Image (cartoon, rainbow, N blue to C red; front, top):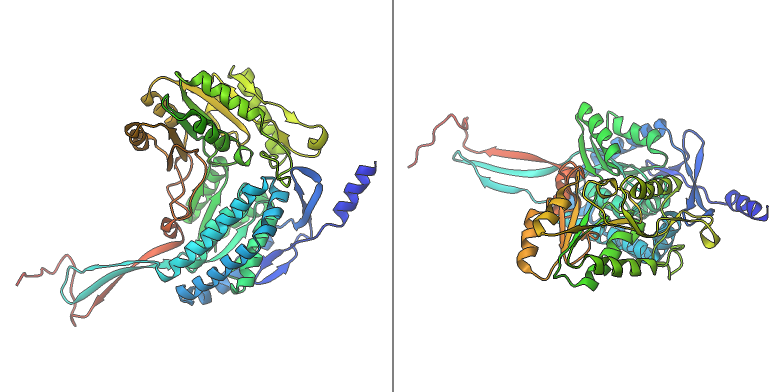
Length: 511
């Protein structure tokens, strides 16, 4: 009873947050709100956020449309200066943003700090593009004629972001959209709205004009769908599940919208018999259980050569059992909670499938942690399945939790077939000391990212990020390649001959 009263007091004193529309922080049209709770301790309420409705999306889109011409006409180097200011603000507030991210998302402090750092890196890097945004010149086929191409903004962009990288992924979308001259409406991840608001408050402080950036909080079914369907939104950039991405793609196709999708993964590490086994175990541990396995790049499959299979599993299980699970705010914690009850139920159902339907061996873990320090959170033991065969559901389907499957193989070609034998193609890796095998694997693994002697997780902002097959629709985030999402090409021809010249029709005589 005392604990219930304390929880009630905590909830009654929580801070309320608002949407950001047209440069003002405003309440939702619905007047309703939802609580953002710490997944490590659900009695800890981070804040109360507006439960937005389609009318709020309409207001945000109208604000973005009103700001579009002024922002588009702002020279790109001046836009970039504001973004550089934004990077400085994020950097100066990194510690605060890190702790608040850990509270609302659950990932351990070091990982949350890395998330914020990625936003810093992305913003610094992309701001530099404001003085490039390169097009190119080329010889014209007619005399006294000049030909070149330039980038132009797409227009009004809708950005829909997930929970697992609460500041990094919004920055991957927001910053290139802005440097290219677009205005945006962001639908924040409903489990992690504070990190998006922190990013947007920093943008406001950096001097980004009113209406250029707008944020709507709420649930996907209410406001995400309204944003996707809005007739004035030209582009949708979405990161999330493959099922939701497919629905968005269908709607955007009907409306002739540009759509960029970053979706699921079922990533694998190949461990050859000549691998540095201790290094491979450390990489597998980090790849499988970093962010509690809640990464689209998580190493959810470990494809291990039969010659070292038993030794690898033994070493891995020993390390996994020693992992400290707990509240991410505790610096000793190595694995935090999963994001919510729905995710917990899904992960536990896959653990049951692995044992009963797939008949795999549960090498360690497999249980929810519900007592003592875990009683108010969403905690699952780090879990390893061994003796997994290709085609099993735990080997094929994205679990998105602290679960990995170990699969034996005999030849490198067999291992490559196993890696490629899923509907996703985001990230892959191989541990080997043989340079020939490494290069052969890099050539044959059909994924958007490939590592040698490292795990499948981790990305650097100056390289393109994205995958093949069911992972996406061919676009790449990060690097300069992201500019091709948020800008369109315009070809320019300047004829100074003083007469009509008909390309492909008029024949030019060689003197």
